Length: 338
Image 1 (tube, one colour):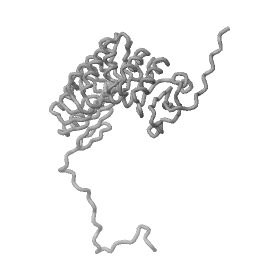
Image 2 (cartoon, one colour):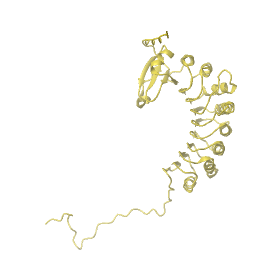
Image 3 (cartoon, one colour):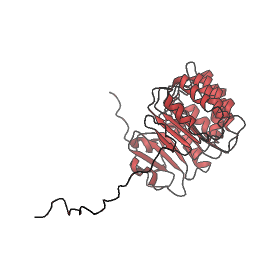
Image 4 (cartoon, helix red, strand yellow):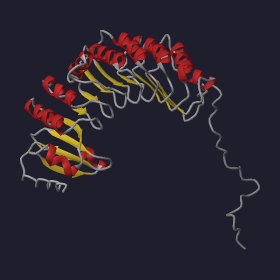
């Protein structure tokens, strides 16, 4: 009768070699941490409860750290100071992300010392509690530099009430960044608001940002006067300028789009608010083509015309190009009240 477990070895047959895993006794231990991902010169951490032995171990294990990313952590000012202290001797850091970590002005000022000492090309401090004082600290840390920089300050209360101090701090920051060769700046949902006709610092800010490569000013309080001033300040349009979810009306849109086209915005994106049904009313001489967000990166650009993205709400977007097309029907006027 056969053996269901396979052929039996003879009593004098030597046993199979047992494969034992290689010893790791001499290898350095990798520090553990919540959702940690380590590379030879990078540390990525998320969901920390605050400064801890785990965070310290990660920072001390990489003397030549080039990328540090901490996200969705309860660091606060104390944790930001802890990070700056542990990396006080660092001079190789190129990418710094401390996003959604409850860092306010005092913690930002401590991180600014780290920023000043390292050749950073990416600084992501989005989703924190940074105000005008923190912005001023960043300005000092970044003064007199060149090269390429991506600076993301989205979703911070950079401009408080009254807005004068915050707008002045941001204007100074943008002027500081003008020494860089290429800047991508994120200022979405930071409370930015001013009248382009009356705010000296507001005009100073707009003069600076139109020279950057990409600028996100969405979800703020910029009005028609700001759009009209931007139109006057345009020389070579940025690769992307996002003004969605601002109180810019059709008059401001029209002036800005005309200036965008007149200044050679070929292949460059201007993002504005308008429902697709209202796009012909605000932008009367354009072709409207719709596509889904999943295909947004692969959407064909109208060559050689500039592009304007008119977005009402996600996920649908509307790409508006300056190519001529059939004139869309004008919306019917509303019935007059009796």
